[in-house]
Image (spheres, helix red, strand yellow):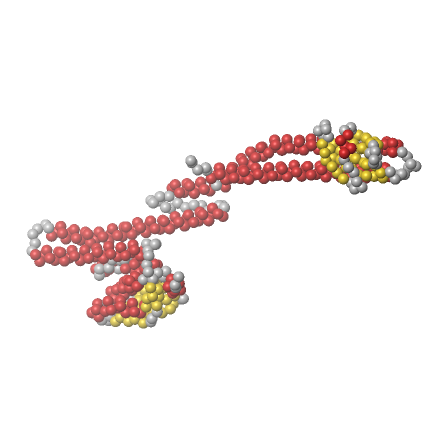
Length: 469
């Protein structure tokens, strides 16, 4: 079954809610009108009964009750829906007087007391009546039962007319509510059509489209900003992937072209064993370079994966720095470069990855240091974090190259790096390792100045990860 449209579902929901409210209001209005009519009739009868009490209690020279009928008739004559009936005292309970519209003998069954009472009942004719009853005293001391009844036909007609008009008006109101709700929902969901248009235009080849956040409701504005942020990240990721693919193709093309060129030249004519050996040795160097690039690429893919799983353990940075220095001690000794480690601290991290980051930095420092200089590793707290600095003196890095030195395959001195065997991935690997450890890597340098690469570890983060769970 095809799901209903969101605008239809919201419109139906609002229509049903509106219908419920209209029916509730109509019911409350009927009940309120009925209550108001009852209260009005009770009040009118109470006032009339008070007037009747006054007429009956006035001492006018012992005028008989029958002589008072004219005054009582004048009291109810303006109301054709009133009936006044008086009954004598027990035991006879004879009807003394009946004025107004006619009533059957059923009214004689209504009791009376000294207090004013009201009773609703139905006559044999089907008329709905409300009767006020009370015992009243005449001037001669005789007590009579006074029954004042009102025919509720007018009230019933009024209620029936209201109900009829309500039944006619409610469907029209419900239809108007439904149409209005549908229109308002469609108008409210109009921005989603913009979302759909933009989503239809987005592709891997074109991620430049963005949603307009102006004049959007707050909820949709937040959604639009989140989508724009997502598209921005995707665009940057695709651009980086494209750039990376171009750089990788360029880096692989050179050794492969060298291998092919040497092989083709060698095969053009017969050569001696020594010449073949020299070609093979040169080819092995190119293959080793290809192997290093592939190895670095695989390592980058591992540490750059967002869900890479690594195990953190306590690491003494000074000890790891000494181990890395030992690895490069022979190459540094050949050039008279002194390796120095100072400071001590512990972090939580992956031992092999931290060693890899230090090795890349120390290797670069030795490679670019003049003979007889120093390469120093310093460990000390810095800006609320733990800093590990690898510094050396040399040619330095020009300021325009500093923002790009951690990009993949970026070289400040392209030709020199190729000759020295670098792949251009070492610093990119360092940055990925620090990202995985929740830290950062910084560089400060200048031409013919001290070059410092700084690894910043978030000590608190690692302390939390090392805490028992």
